[in-house]
Image (cartoon, rainbow, N blue to C red; front, side):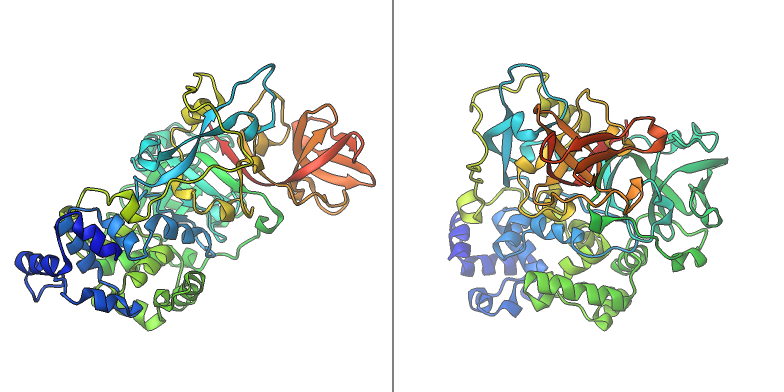
Length: 524
């Protein structure tokens, strides 16, 4: 019924669309739409191919992503799976916004009276405004930033980043910044680097003539020389991080990666020209064998309750050997998630003419694109109240440059917080001095308000102590690494900070709001 209604908006029936596809592409073409397509849809295994969906997009002039969503493939939601599978190696994330017409909740500044607190929940500053379309917001559809997720075995990122961290690299500041670092400066920039054996996030030491040293402070024997014109490329300067700090995200020492003994110099890092090259290179850089990739695809199939997302080892091997795309769209999505390939990049690699796709959005009521309902737990801001030039929302947007909207379906996984709401997010960017270096550069923290039991003070060192948010009896918030010493809450600080530990009587002087699970921070 939904497909009939969409076709009717273009004065088409399926029979007429089938005739048009025969006229344009030919009946023997992969793009041909059979007249009995409706009957085939009753069998899930007979979902239209990507060629047929592109033909529908071309004939109706409706966008390919909208037609994919009609057939159950919401690319923006499925991209969130890249955060739900384990990663051995650092991987560049697909930050593409596929549906720029999607609605999301949005906010407006709330009127402030009195002094602005240094630490406060976002609900103190923001209220609900009318929903906005994704395309109307400063999201990551430009080329200014690249996002990556730090892998378990990325030794070059240690100890500055932890496995699971999401880092953002500014592509506008790249190789020129390396030349400014003439010595091993402990405060120098971090770079997101692409090389023969994957991606990494590290500091670089210039060696002259386009040569740099990939710095590994914890294991100097692992340091590698890279040539920026032959086997490496700097994607950008890391300027922001979303860092998981919950206990289950604690840093784990990885073994020396096997690829460190197989470094091949002299290979070009230019973009792949064939599907075979794309798949082979992406799989190797993701640090996966065919068997490991197949095992992970089983997780994806189970999460989506569709076994067509599973890919056997032999099937994955055949895609690389035969240089032919999968028939099922589910398999394409699985490969993109496994190897960190953008969906459109994959389609272009086997020659799909994306420039022939339609440009118009399917109407909201037919695409089942609904505006979100506001939460009953958050006040509604004045609908016509303009954001003040010095308001928190506009300040954050100015500082960060764009909103990582591709994370919106994955925030619960990224922050290790179920049913994340605005009440769980706190601003920490005020004037109050924060001793811990992770908090000094922080802008926002996510708090699990159900975790209120710090570990005893003698259990672990300062660096391993979890962060907690504490509310003092005078109404001020305190954030730091917290332990419990008898009935005393102790905010511990690194020795090098020079700050003294703070102590509060638990339940008398202060109470715990919850454990910090993630920190969003800037480096500039």
